[in-house]
Image (cartoon, rainbow, N blue to C red):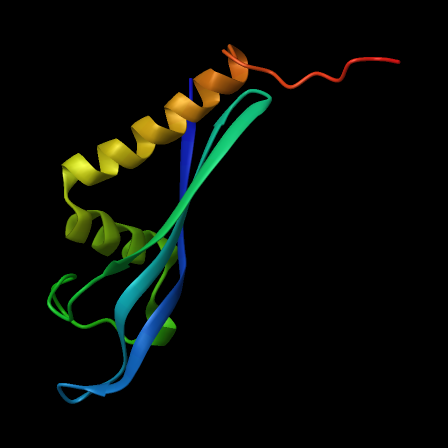
Length: 106
């Protein structure tokens, strides 16, 4: 069973927007899937809007969990599923490779 870890701790902010300070507008996400000894990672960015998370949360009060929620909401369920499916496929390829690189001896 694959466990997915979403890291959305790196963000771009506008110093001032709509009367608020340090407003997150872009999330740099890293998703890592782990299945026993196998793992795979996908990375990217996602634009989020000030209204994405509802009430404004000051930057110092943000948590990874909150920003992951914003990121997944902005992506939509289909894109989240595609990212996780891609990671699952990479892990399956590691478990059952269809091609390997070998070196011929002298």
